[in-house]
Structure formats: C-alpha cells, structure tokens
Length: 256
Image (cartoon, rainbow, N blue to C red; front, side, top):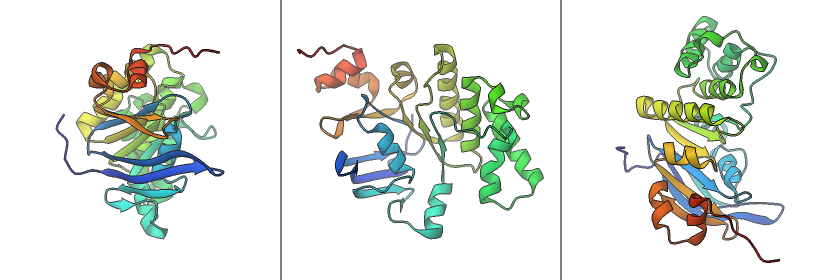
C-alpha cells in the first residue's frame, strides 16, 4: 500500500520497566500513516508494556513517544488531553460497561469529550455501529453479544471521536478462527477505506500474515527489537534464528 514517509508515531530511545527491572531498552521505530503496524513477540517480551506506554497509561524510564508530532510523555494538561483524543483504544477484554447498552457504550467518549446534543451523539454512535456491522444491536446489552461482536462494539467506541489512530490489544484473543478472520477483514476495511492507522499487539500468526503491513518483533532476552519488516519476508529471510522459529512455529526444546 502507499504510505507517507512522514511518521504518524515516532518512538525514540524508549526504555520501560517496573520495580527497578528494565523490560524494554532503547527502542526506536516509526509508524506510518494508514498502515497496519503490529507489535509481536513471545510471552513476556513487553508487547503490552509498550502499548500501555504508547497510549499514555505509564511513564517510561527514558525516551519519547511522539503522536502526530506531539510527545505524549512530556505533554501536560490540555495538550495531553488533546493527544489522548487523537487516538482510540480497544482493550483485550473489550472493556464494555455491562450496565450500558451498546449504543450507550459507543456514545460514552462523545459524552466525555464533546458538548454535542444527545441526538447528534446518538447519530454518530449509530454510524460507528454501522461501520462495524452492528447496526441492529444498538439496544443490546454487552452480555447478549458474542465475543466477536463485543470486539466490534469496542472498535466502534474507539472510533467515536474520529481518531486517525486505533490501538488494539490482542483483538483476536478468545475468538474462533472464523470470527477472527472476520475481524481481520474489518480491520483491513477500516484501514484501506477510512485511512485509519492501526497499531496492534498480537501473536496470532494467521492474523499477522493476513493484515500486517509491517511488524516489529520484541525479545525479552535482549529487551529490544530483533526484527522489523514485512512478516512474509521475515518468515523466509530473517537472520535471527528465533524470528524464523516464531514465524514457522518451530518448537524449541531446552536440555534439562
């Protein structure tokens, strides 16, 4: 796909850790407008840690995270709020409020961050539900939806403020292969037709090969990035043996 050479997200000299233990060290990478960018790696490599820092939930040990030219690490007050409003987030468990129906869940960011009339909020929320294929489910409660439908509703809520970037945490987790494939198609549709930039954390290989324009692979042993590029090319040409093992699903047996 055609992508701008200008980065919509730039991570520079980024390090993160907890309780005196460094998890990620000196990461540098860019995300380009309109691409589907995937963060992958084995368990415990820091994928979710990186995502949580990118959306401003945690403060890094070092480095900067610029989103559309604004550093979320150092921004304060209204400047920080403006950055938060520029992207949407879908959490792994969907995080829908069980006491609200689906329309109310999707409308929530509009109530929080805008002064629009309630009628306008409802119209926007219904439009977002239509985009994800849930037009007829506005009045449903979350408990009445399947796992895949909850993920779609969470994506609709993440799009409520028309962000240019969506962060998705393990979108295929807990889904059967067919539902996961349907979600992949939705992500590709939103990216290609609306120009949304996606940053996705996942280790699901079928989804990675289907939707990723580019990936970075994290490794807990090096606490850094050990591969970057097109996943199809990395599968065949990566120099790092663990990268090839990951993409080929080759088991590693350690001697006792």
